Image (cartoon, rainbow, N blue to C red; front, side, top):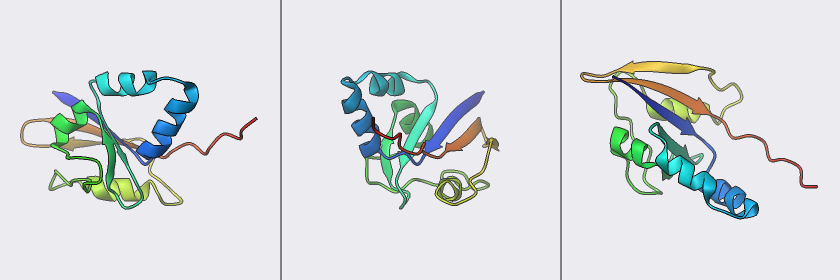
Length: 116
């Protein structure tokens, strides 16, 4: 079975700022219900937020914990670190474990929109 995992460097504080500016928690509710794992990390590769699917897929801990490296043949931490660099990867990577396949993608945060 193919499972999806997305890693983003958009920190939880910026996520919460966007949610509060929009006046609701709809984006967070959607994120929490996604079947795909979503992990938000900071520049030191600490977890800002992980939705329940990511918690199940990776066994990740609480905010502030280091992003795990759960697979011997693919470094999730290396992927996340490249998202902070000048030339982040595009597309995703298929990671095969003993019992599962994971499609792993990383996303850089969008630059902030100018306030009007």
